[in-house]
Image (tube, rainbow, N blue to C red; front, side, top):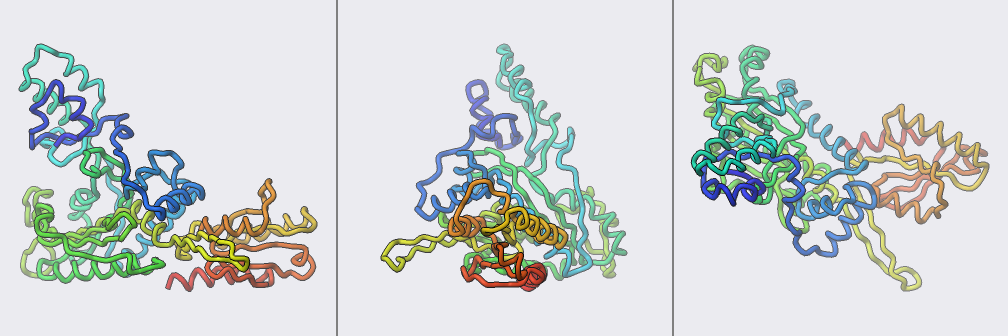
Length: 458
């Protein structure tokens, strides 16, 4: 079906296109930002979370991106959001490739020029000027207009909406790689386009894909296996694991070729959203991709069978949002003087946190303290421990203000280099999760952080 934006362009000239069920979906350039609808009324929790994510550079401060975040849709990331997503993608990749030697990474083309397909199910990139020229031909009948639009669409490049097709195309050479033995999988990550929220407006999604090829006799067991593994993985990095759950896809919502589907869901403040979907797809798509030539699809089991396909597709942009929501804590309590104290913390899992440690200076000889901070920062970088150079700040702030900032950024530990460090080598270390400050020798801090992060990833 045509996207909502294009329908608006064509409705005055092509009313029949609205009801055409076989029309090709397409994407017009420069029309995405006009597709957003007003967000639902926010709760205090959602408003606070969104504002924190903007203030601490997890999402873009643009109003459009804030609205998309509120609606559970992909939005532009800030520097810390980008680092969080990178960490999440790396962890996903390790989770599907490390447990078995039979998962291989691939890289497929993001667009193609396909003039033979009828375009069904594709998103197309179309120049607005091409459509404008057709619509300006007033002498054409409705049928002629429809035909010319379809021709333009069929000649336009398509963009991918998933990685499935690329994996199906690479099945045969990969089968040779594994000596025609099953099971094995093909994994890929990157950007895809998806239609969202029923408006027909396309959005970019950072997607993960595992396509698992197995014998027909074991496909149901493998679907169960991957469902358990994926739910366990999402819960592993959650502050509140119960926020993630799995549920079978209702029969009326199954994809055309799928016999069974499972969704890994996260319970956002605004409702449940899927972060990963698994399908048992049978062999129909694999046969169609290879033009029904069964002989080249056979694997070694003595039965001349065609493999069945299990697909695991994740939305890592929504995964980032899920972990931001899951890790957010807004603590309110009365202090000793009955004054309301508030503490906002992103308790991100240690391996997900974009910044592991912040380095700050106390009072003392500025030049010498800065040299110590720079040396320690270099050690952290060499150990691949992401550090925040707080000592470079130009505006004075109290340690209380700095700790509040680091808690909202999700920084695991903050370290203060002071005059005492120059004299005895001791520095102060504060934990994000406990707010407890400890004294540690400067020679121990790097190994302490490395052990802490490694232990959390077990």
